[in-house]
Image 1 (cartoon, rainbow, N blue to C red):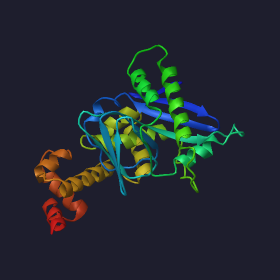
Image 2: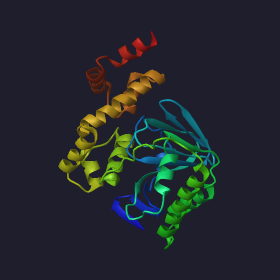
Image 3: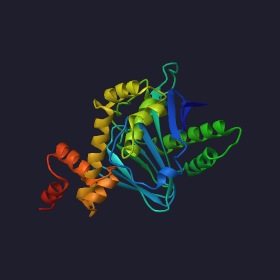
Length: 287
């Protein structure tokens, strides 16, 4: 069953054995978000990627994972990563949580699946669930009357095939499954800061959540121990530093890419945050 909670976002729930999976996806998954690389970030959800066409790269603190057409990967909660979108590539990306169903006592599916997801990134080369992913993409963009049931069926098949293909993995202690009562809302907030930090506003985010700015501010403070403006600054400064150290862009170009209308405001914010001007930071690193 699909539940509409916020504009453009859908929630799909499936149960296999004693494991309850909740998938969140948005209507832009296969289109508008394909052209920009993500910033370095982490979140409180599992994130699954499948490459429909071309190839994509997932970069963590310790390793790079190249996903070619037909490959899939699952990034675990709290794993710092970024994704690189290569030209003309197309992928499916969505997040999910998994919780133990207390009403089911005769199944160990939850424990087995948690052991599978124990790694920072689980890579599935030429994943056997490719047909299910491709059907998912087709159903997601169609207007079939039975669309919800078809999508739910695809997700059920994908999870089952992951279990089958990785069931021989034996790990010690599974990662803690990070859940809370507002997973869905927190995902939207987290996604907003990752993708909209250049032009985002508290009012716009509050409208997406159908909350007041004051309520939204309280949730953000609880999630990050930062205000909305502080979180935006963190994202902008992190992206600015990455560009300074890893590109030949001018300071003016970097300021624009970070959402500043001119260099003056960017210089002031950067110096306050890092204690150095952009040029000083770049020079000290190159020496």
